[in-house]
Image 1 (cartoon, rainbow, N blue to C red):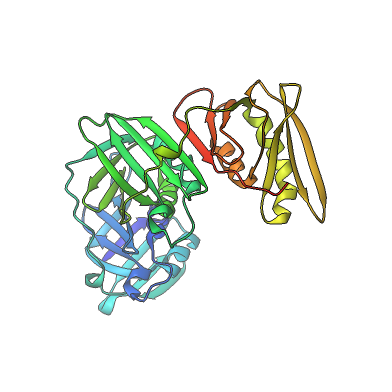
Image 2 (image 1 turned 30 degrees about the vertical axis):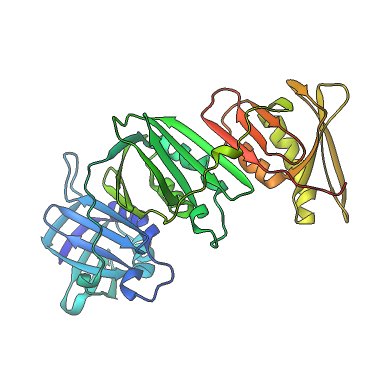
Length: 380
């Protein structure tokens, strides 16, 4: 294998695939990046068996030449060094040659690096996914669906299914749901899906976070292919494979109330800033407890938190509207802040059904998203 390639294009492809390199593995080949060179171009692949990412660099496009291929071939190079080496090479042109026993020489300018490569035949074969069910979605929308739900997945591996985001598609409506049993985030979007539908597809939150990082900013279309226990995301020259999580996701629809005893409408930014200030003290207690109390004037709420060692924060906030029964409720301010950060509406609705019933938060501009937080039971 022998080629000359643009450092920028090689580095971009490496940055994409390196997200799938196994951090800790007993299988040495999975700590590497596989390079396949043909006369059409260069394919880089990395896998930790749960996710696999493949990036293709065409030898040339209509606009420019990206690589010159002298000999075709394959090699697996140790990702830890390969990623850093390519990033720090001095010249734009990179020369790579693989010799006997996969010994690899990389040259750029006056720099020469020798790496011990591995046999590419030992690298796992990527799954073959029949493209019977393909849903196309704008990249910006997919990134929003992930961003507005993934923070609510569980970090507790004892319930593996809750470490993922549930996907449900029916009648052209794609729904994402995430919960850790203390809070819930739901986001829906209308997509062109024909008669395709699926349910109980659960994808790891960590995987979706990595996927969101490589979705192009140019709002390109992402093709999503669903088959058996695998999902494939096709983004321009990048293929992103992931396994679905095993198990059945709990039915969360029954815990979302539709009728409320107390209803608030507030400015999102003002509430977020007030909760953030209260959080400064509540986090010192490790409980993050903040309280909302309605005042007797019928249009103001009080937000408060305290620390036994530091002191107390109290702030009054004017509401846009306040209806229903008087309220005093305690909740995890970190959970509330996480939800407020992803609400893309200037005003929001908060519904309460009692001091120990779920708190519902929704944007006023649209009905695409919903957040639920369970309150705390406190002694005072």
